[in-house]
Amino acid sequence: MKGGGTRTLLLALGVVISCLVGLPNLYDKFLVAKFVATATGLAILFFFALVGRKRWLVPHSPVFYIYMLFTLLCGCSILWATNTAEAVFAFSTQLLSPLIIIVFYGLLSTKKQLTQKALWISAATVLAVYLFFTLVQLFHVESFSFDQLYRVSGLSGHKNLLAVMLFVLSGFLLTSFAIFENKVLRWLSAVVFAIAFIVIFLLKSRAVLLGVLVAGGCFGMMMLLRTRCCNEARRSHLLLVMSIIVVYVFLTVGLRVFADRSVPHTAEKSEIEHKMLSTSSLAERCLLWEKTYHVVDNHPFMGCGIGNWQIHFPDAGLDGLYRADVWNVNFTKPHNEYLGILAETGYLGLLLYVAFLTSIIVLSFFALLRTENRKDFLYGAIILSLFVGCCVNALFDFPNSRIEHVIWMGILIANLLKTIANGQQKTLGMGWNMAFMAVAVGLVVVGAFRLKGERNTFMMQQALKANDWKAVERYGNQAFSFFYTIDPVGLPLHWYIGKAEKQTGNPKAIDDFRRAYHYAPFCKENLNDLGLAEYYASHDLKKAEFYLNEAIRISPNYLYPSLNLAYIYLSENQPQKAKAVADAIYFDEHKRDVLKTDAAFFEPFNAEAIRHKIDADYEAVMQLRKTINDKSQSHPMDE
Image 1 (cartoon, one colour):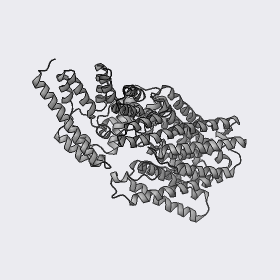
Image 2: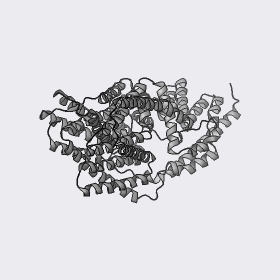
Image 3: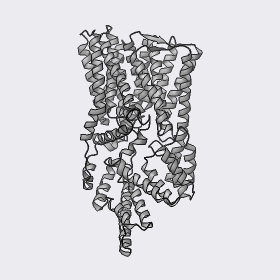
Image 4: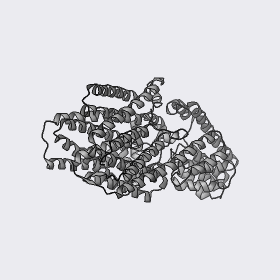
């Protein structure tokens, strides 16, 4: 954009604020709050640009157009998504990225030095705040064990997401060696970078440490090749095509083979101890990846819809995923950005995304090696290394789902596109300002509904703990909207509402369980309650069997549907079927002891309550078997 140095600094301040803002009384105190802050900042920026009749510059590069095509495909996937609300919000988050890229590309094209300095100031400010909160939290942990470290989240909601932000922000500080002459600032940047790296190491985020290692290797290789001439365009294009093929084959075939061979495959119920011992983060990720390919097989070409992995993932079955199957932990992401894209946008979506990432890395690499200005080369090498490190980290995590990471990744991409375009750019007409502002305002509207939904969900959870069922129903209805249908852990709001209505004797409960099934057809909790409702409210045994058996298939160690189905068979005077269901439940004294021992590790914040639940489940299973045995002795079993 032409002119506006003051606006550059204001934009940098907006980045700082959007990365820090968090609101109380929200289920996730940072995600939606940062989304709304960022969208609002962009809307204001585009409004001033419209009033000032400013024009935006965009790179005239196939790489940029590939990314826009990928974004368009993500938007189109809303049309076939099962849960439209989650698809709309996921796409809204996705839309932030191209808007941020356009803004910063324009600023770098017209006010390069001022923008670079503003970014350094923003990174230094945000990093200082992040480090302050992180160090305070680290001083309050009892030990550096994994369960204690998960209490350390800074301002990111999760220690791994905190670690990747520390990596990106501290890496940005090193650009001081390219943009400042002041030696004090340079050495101060190096010292703060070292402190941030120590904190990352203490957090034990292995995915981020691997990203740091790869980023360091990338930077070192570029420094070594700096003196060599790489002007052969033919060589770079050949390497680009080969890289796209290799990465795409690895993500679609190679990773699948690796995941399949890295998880235990057994139907032996006596192997539960082996599953418990295979709960390292890598083993769990491999299981998530393997089951994600099941979603891909069901939706190969177009995907299941952006933001809908969490809706379809349970269909693969939770057996083997110990936390999800036994402890009722709901996964919302596959812990691999690329597999998430493959599942949600299909093979075409992943191809576009891989082509974009590989192109921007390879072409930036060769473009930087041809850069004659030493400072420009150093600045670009740092940016490219950070970007590569983030791409590696995304193999094991889901940082692109957090708004602060979207912002800084957009800034990295804008810098790299500036390097690739090499002055080849287009000036957008005045109508684009209006379009960008309209999009940003639309994002604010979506965010406002999400804020309203999450605030009421938070209040609903508080009412649930107090067994205030009327309040649960009221807050659930207030939370629901076209833009918000499931809570942040994947449970449909109508399931909560249905449970509340069931407790208060409202016959409409079955209708809400059916609505919940529409928004999340593989939610085991709702399948269990819907099966019961179909039997007791509409006396439909076949539907009850279907929904309860579906819940059992999805989560064999989720005991309630098995218990409920067995008692239904008993009420139908079919004790043999009830016995078959009861015999399929693997729960004895040995399993109870092992589960209670593991409770402190898997649920450190609520271990005692979990132990009481395990005892209650065991007693329920024993009572079921006793009831079946008593009925079998008094009434011979019929075929």
